[in-house]
Length: 294
Image (cartoon, rainbow, N blue to C red; front, top):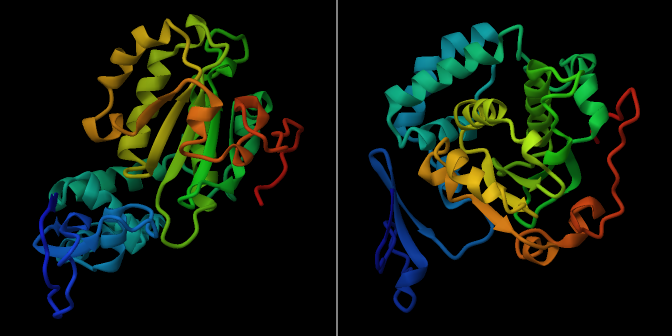
């Protein structure tokens, strides 16, 4: 919970906002409160910065609750990871522990178990990878977040070679590539969802619902923003259906952009490929075998 309030002095006696109380806020997290500068752009998000800076009682309790299973299954939780699960659960330790437990069990299942991208068998996502419909850019957003591009027109659920499980494994693989590019202190990634050229045949509600479930429950608090580019007229009738699958906090992170100029408000065009109106000379390779992530 974030509450803006005039803060005249920190707990250690430093004057903070005698002239600009609007720039400061009290952030309550569990039984603690931290004074932060809401105008700062150095962190990934205000709450993630707080979560990483403060080892709260709730984080310690969460680690104690899930530690044995996580160690047994070989799944590592950093302090930032604990913070993500706690923020998702609004610092309800019981809910966070259940979601984290479910994550560990899901992460180590044969179907989607990929503890790191080094261990996934790329042959199991070969058809999806050859399409080039989703990939991680080699550069980062201004906030230091990995950028994932997704071309909706290349998602063809009626194609003879389409396999729903492979499609989901590939999305997981791609998001794991994004996580692998995160620098210390960064916990989120940005999506650019290119809707140009898509038709109703590309709208796959079953896949969308499954993906949203994975995003919310398996990658909690990983989404920085999702930019929806070049949405066709019919998609605006689809959006209310999709939006209902999201929680309100996540829905607010989806932003419609009608042009590359709109995109540039969030990500400079020289960090985006020409396929979405950017000026970067990066082109995703669909050659096989794939080029390792650098």
